[in-house]
Length: 108
Length: 114
Image (cartoon, rainbow over all chains, first blue to last red; front, side, top):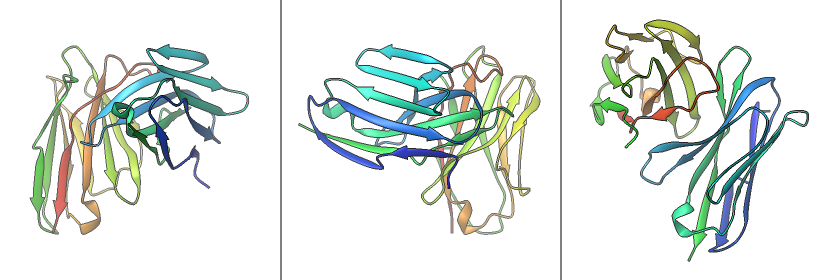
């Protein structure tokens, strides 16, 4: 079993839909990152979380430390949100462990 | 543009060879991370340097080594290359070594080993 599991692996939705991507981890962590990888390959850091909730524009990230779970939400999704979303956790030894990613496709 | 530069963009080489990938962090960033992204393994953390010193080590093979120079640029050396080393290699930088800081990713170097 991977230390970081993401679901779903693939998600296709219509423009405007509310999107949720989940990340569960099995190790003790000091921080969790959500990354976005565009079709061209570039990676952008979206959020760093150690507790609670963060919001940036139409993106919201939450983390529940007790349940070892984080979610990334996208409100009013748009075709430009189509990308791979990757969850990464930093364990207590400062090593970074990545999930396999969720491939999101938003249809116009 | 993240401000992190990586050279070269593409590299094609043969098995058994040695290559060097270069990363220049954002101005002011002291920490550099190296990652490998392959089709079968996804993203993997290789190694982190902070202000010239190795700070954390991930799944870096013994055939690979890295260093960070006084001007804070970093190089990743890959030797005795195998077909399975073909991947995208990203570096990222952050201001400090803390895991609580945002990382800024470079555009990556695509390595193809034939």
